[in-house]
Length: 337
Image 1 (spheres, rainbow, N blue to C red):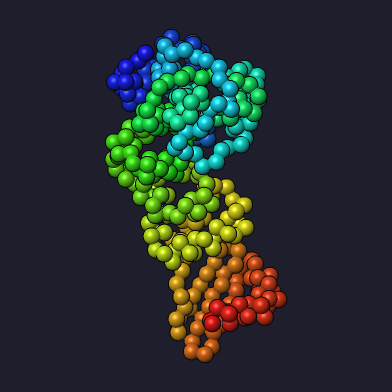
Image 2 (cartoon, one colour):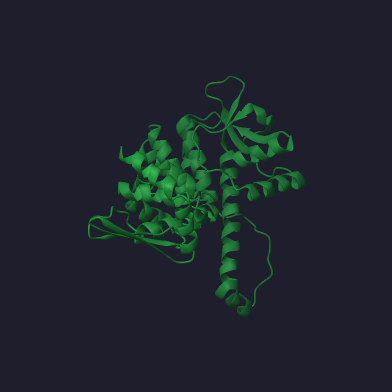
């Protein structure tokens, strides 16, 4: 059995060796090589290459970590999830593709589990959550390696496997870091688990602290958005009024129907351009939803106030208000008491 010291050394290694004797590929002509890296075709090619490299790196990391260990077949019902969550939901389309791949070719790589720290005869998954879920969906046993890890070794292995695979978004990694810190783990352990430096860990945790949990959930994974966009949003949400305005936006149909990255951009842009505030005597207040389908301007002066609406939905929204004017006024009177 691998010693505790050697196991930790294996878990914290950040560099992976290249695959020996890779399969031969046809040589590219100079013209083909130039075109391969140019324009839209080049961008697509680079993206495919990056995905392939990530998948290969993850396989190499798992193979290195599981090297020399016996692979067994376990009943999925005997395996519990990790005690630290690292994902916001799951990509159902990608999951179904994984299910079909395992149905057709079988499970290529074993998952890593540890004996359950509190329940005799059960296990806890360290990495391979989606493969475990796929095995459950297919009603078959899951191929696994069992290693006696403690909690610290567990989170380092879980975090590094995800870091190598690179399929977690920035906010998912930030939530993972925040959860680790709340569970009492040191910044050194968090840095080792995510393979990032102290500055990045600090930014990750500050984003999670500044962006309310319900707003993060509403936005989702935003897999194409990096830390800068999230950090911009976090800075704006330090204003309590901005958080209230953000909650108005996440309830709109335009926000709900948008993709995750688009939702993040809509919210960040809206908070940048529209800072909510209370209209005072002699000044105006302007409001607009994230999609700019209507613009509402309130001008107040003494005992007189004017509400004007513009843009695409202005007429329909005005009729909506007019049809409910009595109820709105009753709500207003109740709010004043």
